[in-house]
Image: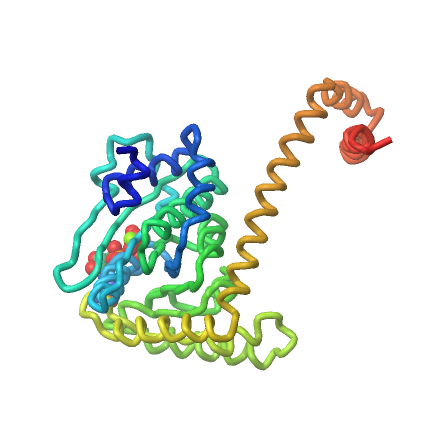
Length: 324
Ligand SMILES: Nc1nc2c(ncn2[C@@H]2O[C@H](COP(=O)(O)OP(=O)(O)OP(=O)(O)O)[C@@H](O)[C@H]2O)c(=O)[nH]1
Ligand SMILES: [Mg+2]
């Protein structure tokens, strides 16, 4: 039996193998993705992001348990952009699976650096597709930090939970980090520690302030951004959090926002693929003419500048492509 056949029959080892296959972009992986895109899928993707040590994994565990208890199959993808990963040797550490006695299936997978930031976000997106095609109801994606890589990753999610802690301090920093642009829900975790109330209040007043600035493009969105305080270790408010985001997802589905978001994500994905393809092809055409070296010499000799030279090189390709 092929790995794909075993995957289709619900074999977890085949699932892990297929995730590695697409993660490493092994030969033929695009054909496989093409088949998976045609399969029925219904998983909801939830992105959870926040600073290191904020309690994301503890929260993800708690949320998973609740979703499992309601009979859902839950997969978790933990993305760690800082951890270099070189091959299959660590697979055992990167995969956990258990069939909950009380509920659904639970699968855990970690993803590590793929060399380039675009690569990691693409690998995470493709792994999520595999999990979706396998039949999971939810995929929880944990990412550390708030850099471009994390933004790219959570931009592919249906709902984004941003996790802060009392130590996050001045919540205005949050705004600067662009968190309000991506958050659908704010969580202030470690609420057993002093200062949590203050961060909740700061966040709430910041969101209220943004609503008053009617001209802000996200004003409408921030109106409905809830702020919850949790204690992931003791389970405080985890039920409210799960209830909140499941209701939000249902509302988004009812209002059409869910589909609109997915449509935008897919449009972005197709555009990115196209962009990379066009870029690579155009550059290759220009390079094959050996013109770049000539241009560099002319710029260094003070006879040209990089901007108009690049423009002229681009035009040579563009003109060559035009039909007569
Ligand atoms: N007091 C308290 N400790 C917590 C809470 N949530 C998590 N922790 C602890 O904080 C530490 C970090 O928790 P993790 O869940 O690993 O945090 P993380 O955000 O996943 O960490 P990284 O993935 O390394 O960024 C652990 O020791 C947890 O037990 C909480 O609500 N209150
Ligand atoms: Mg973690």
